[in-house]
Length: 213
Image (cartoon, rainbow, N blue to C red; front, side):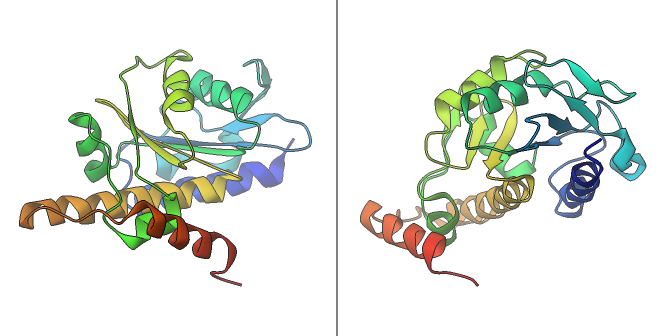
């Protein structure tokens, strides 16, 4: 079931190593089907080059297996927690992308130093607290810390992004790493200047409501 969503998720997973956001078997993407409300998620510990659409696991929002022969991602409980508490979210990505995770390692948010950040995130990328893998704990930190952003750093861990669909969440993950790298480079040169909040709001509104086709 949900063959189209499984194939879309498989294709989106290939974007993670392509954009240097993951290594080996780390990271994962999930998507919520609007009709059934079932969640499709990457299986645990499968390398990206070996991944196939039929390997994707389908769960309900309580974590019951609907379809799939493999174990779901070890982050599944946290993905499901986010979906239950954020009905506007239909896609979630988790990565350990290096520049963004460097900020997470020192527990620092990423301020709005770049117009690209204002466009995509509408504010700083926050940093939540530490939580152990394997339960709902990480999902709780994401929900509590992400605010109105589409990305959040988790202390000592990595990045979670959300979106109205899985592709939007993947785009947010790519942009998170891109701006984190640029900000890190800027910090080597001196002290970056934050964009005033009123200008951030204007830039985000333009990008959200005017930019593109």
